[in-house]
Image 1: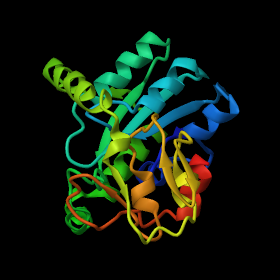
Image 2: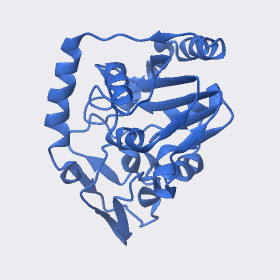
Image 3: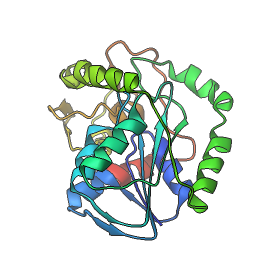
Image 4: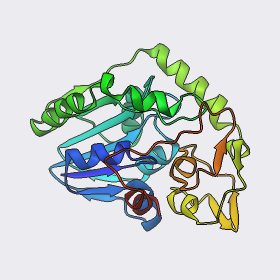
Length: 248
């Protein structure tokens, strides 16, 4: 079984590792030009962004060729998944990817302008993460056929959110504090090489809004406009080295 994943703070990487022991980073696959995969089962694991599929994952799915009798998709989300599973199914149909199973699971939401990370971490127990993940793993092992349904109304919210969020230059929302020591961690964790460090980070115009730079900064020197707290989050089961290896 092959798992293709995208992660910024480790949630989706943790899910990918729990599902199978052969997993590949989507940003790295794009950079390496690897788009052909064959296996008995193939999975796509990624976080929900603006109630839909992240741009980088959609870009990958437009090019990938998957040869498998059982293709599944798992999206992680923190508060509201919106039309993400519906969006994934739509992208699959456009690109001749037939999904046998699409599901979602709630985890910590890392969107700093929307959530206080301290409260998110404190509320993990109520989200039954391990219980829900174990059920999904069992479904996949048994080859269950299932597509999580969302109403057409959620698709409208997704399209609206996409226009409001992705049409703006998100790079302008970042501030680099004086305690930045130029360690280049932000550059290394950026999945699309959108950050270059010359003593201090320089943000270009291809931000995916994953916030990996802010969450993974050892000095907590990168702030985001209207963030709810100074606290940051990395999945407790994933190391910074693993996130760097996923996106560098």
